Image 1 (cartoon, one colour):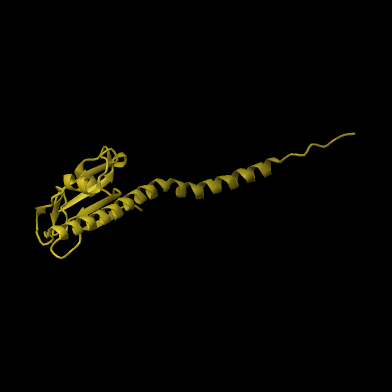
Image 2 (cartoon, one colour):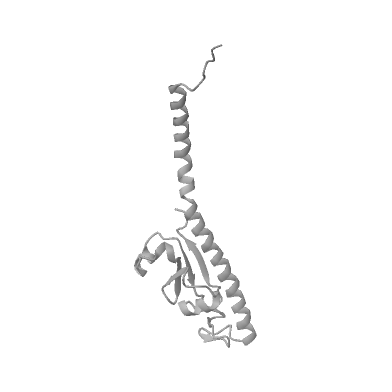
Length: 156
């Protein structure tokens, strides 16, 4: 009794390789953008934390009766402008309570820019401000406003 061995022909193997190649080419850009999405997610989380912290600082300013002052310091040591956190690196570190290992801060009043340290470790402050880097910008308020907190350049 003779058994016939069945296998794939060269044409079938080539077709399968071409199909796998097409799938890889279409899926790779989506997978490569995961890092940008993760950076955007982290910065949006920081934005939420800063919004909540700013609202708490404002409540404390109301309790201390200094919400109308252009520049004063609360009993907790947090500097405020019209009741909201003043835009300095030192002040925002007090407000948000984060580690510097993860974040790079640039700028000072009226705005501070947050970027991920591992993303911008070799960048100068000017490069961070000018380049299309995924960043969060905190701008302290003018009278009757809330601070402006925006996430930019994260989904290129």
